[in-house]
Length: 349
Image (cartoon, rainbow, N blue to C red; front, top):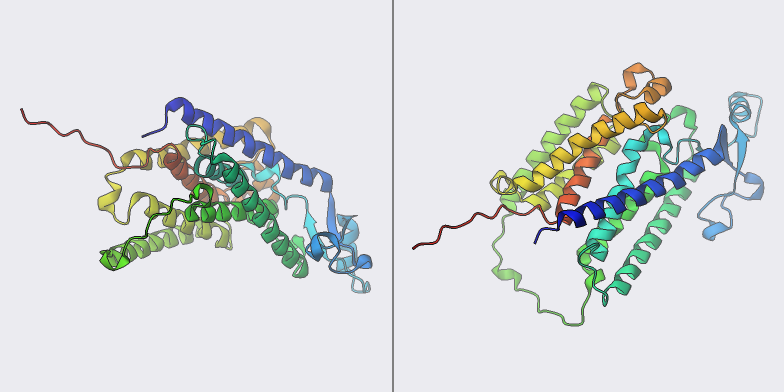
């Protein structure tokens, strides 16, 4: 049964509010850093005591001091740069980074809790516990990732400044999404003592050939698309971040709408929500950047043009499109409008 329009609007509104608040927290880290680097404080040891040594001791040092020391051949003690302003999802690429927590909260609320129309009071405590476990797993995983990042620290001057691929918030939110999908797929939030006997898989008829043929066809299409976008400077130069999201989109699309065009044509509503929602999201962030001057869209962006040059003002377009294709596809599933169109059958007199 499709979700009522009022409930769909409520779900979208709550996810947007939570994602916006989340992004403000990360932007606050940028403001704390200002025009300084966070560098590893080697006077207190390499590994630090906090969180079992997963995070290093860091201190803030002005950028000009760090650059002078690291470029001076006579200076033996070089600074190990851990982070800089922009590494925590600053407002310069708000449009790109905003989509990641948006997907995460949509999964938490719609698929784990069942908000707003399928909240079971009996199951709600265990579903909230599931989300707490997801958050815990995400934080621990990212502490390890940030520990590794500190051990293999590179000079941020060699990175692309203010591009979403370098933002720590993407790690946090991607891990949150991954664990949320995993726990949702395992059914831990709705686990019941009334178990049902598993079906006999020996009687299943496989569609492996059809699935694999179309999966590799779609992966080939998005590969060519990504290469074309990179060549035309419409995507991040290394392509890895963009391409990973396009692969995620292919996998979710085939899981949600079927494994060949003969199934896709039967689900026009869900595919239309995905496409139209993405097309409407792009101009919203474009206008938001023009209105605020700080909340960057990631494409046709004066902020990126100033940081990277006019030829790179559209490097966020590929990532922007792929992220919001995933979000609106998940939203269509959350409001239960991704299924096949039901045709009325004329009854015989």
